[in-house]
Image 1 (cartoon, rainbow, N blue to C red):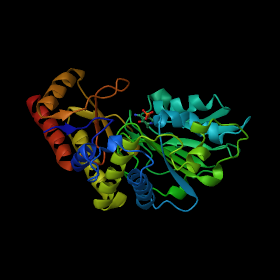
Image 2 (spheres, helix red, strand yellow):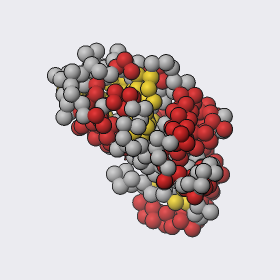
Image 3 (tube, rainbow, N blue to C red):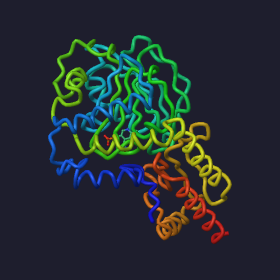
Image 4 (cartoon, protein in one colour):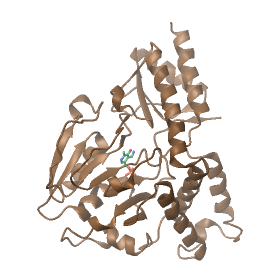
Length: 355
Ligand code: PMP
């Protein structure tokens, strides 16, 4: 058995894999594979409707917001956000809390002025800057809720005088949020929500249509809203598997229940990192992520043998991102706490052997 701590595409529930595999062979007894049916068939339309409905239910999405399933990953959203929200000659505010935030703000520069309100780049993004002002004349304020590479996460969201746009790629559906606090939320599905190939967008309708720009159809949220995420052929399989995963979240007791489990997992792992003399955490304690737990070996020579021990125990995907080094345990929704215990035991066994 493997314990998948990979950062993404990441672990999904075993039952979702089984249901998805069955649908590829025979979708709901239709005698057809999910992969060969029309996206405009009533069978697939029911899948998309259910996926949208589940997003609305799990996040209690208020009236006045649209839920979209798009393509191009979170990286396309880096450009689509300013394209749709930043007026000609306007300004957008960005918090630079990691490489993904940096990539997002670089795209915005194609469309207008970018005010970086604060950055933790100088300290290799080990913390989330908190002391800054958001310019009241900005079109929006962009943040990254969880910095996948560095293992930092916003524990609370900043009050903002302008609409908040949030990249939630690596912690979507891992904790309760108040959608009304955001103008736009986006997330590549491939960590907590589904397979690679689909991107969730939740957008407040009233913030759209204010830029005076002509926007190409595929990159225009309004076209996508009017087309019900079917302006072109949507990624049917990725949407189907996302729908199954959202249903799994619901069956677990919803986002609140998942959040409690996630807290128990991260608490246990950070406790071991803090206790074990051979390892140390990377991120500032108050900003520690409940999704990506980054740590290093006190002695760099221990890195390789610890990875070897992990491999022997079926622990996979634990090597840290090349810009941070060490280890990164991604403990997404579908990772059971038993896998976290296996990792903790490996750390203890390693410390015992290397006393
Ligand atoms: N934002 C964050 C926080 C991410 O973790 C990632 C991918 N790891 C991205 C954006 C980029 O996503 P995509 O590959 O879907 O474009």
